[in-house]
Image (cartoon, rainbow, N blue to C red; front, side):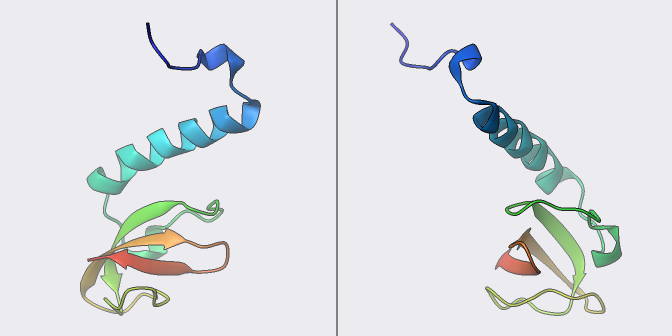
Length: 84
C-alpha cells in the first residue's frame, strides 16, 4: 500500500509548488545563464546557475561582471549564492 497522497487531493498551492520545483530542477542543471539571462519575474526560491557572477561567497548578492559560475537562488529581492 502506497503512502503517497493522490495528486487530486493536494491543494492548488501544493500543485504550484511541485510544478515549480520540477521546472526549476530541469533548468538548474541544464541551462547555465549569464546574469542578464535570468528570469525577469522570478518567484522566491527560483534557482539558476549563473555563469558571470562577481562573487562566490555563500549568501552574497550576485551581480554580473565576474567570471565565476555559481548556483544562486532568488530570495524575493536579490539573487544570492547558495553553491559553487
